[in-house]
Amino acid sequence: MLTATVDSGAVLSVHIQDTPHADGRTRIEIAGTEGDLVIVSERNEPGVIQMNELRLRGSRGPGRVLADLVVADPGHFSDLTPEARNVARFYARLAEDFRNGTCTVPDFETGLRMHRLLDAIRHSAETGRRVRTDAPADR
Image 1 (cartoon, rainbow, N blue to C red):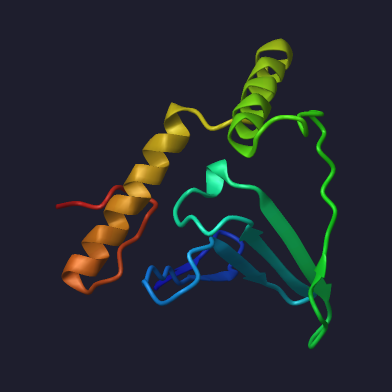
Image 2: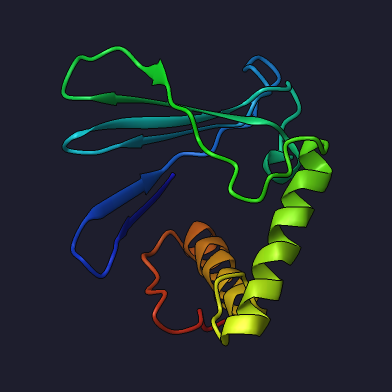
């Protein structure tokens, strides 16, 4: 379980479960004040969210039933496998970044921040203490 407060003051809770008794699909649930979103992988293959067909479901208001949401494929890569489609989308966005001078895809700094966050989570788990992530976890 990970609990954090983001810059806006919103509280974020993350629970990661990996058990042989659970459905192996990846499932991400986002509960908000105006409704819920759920992302579910189609195949029963844990840990491969980036290479899996995903389904987005949502509801608005408390107690509402989740319904499938249609997500447009702006890259027109629907004829590719999920694995190839995600790589094609990444490279298409990277090409746009080069053309436009923008930075919309993960870069080295993104990876560095992610690894610092993972190090802070490990440090917190080992020590039982809260760890701030605005600075690298000291060991």
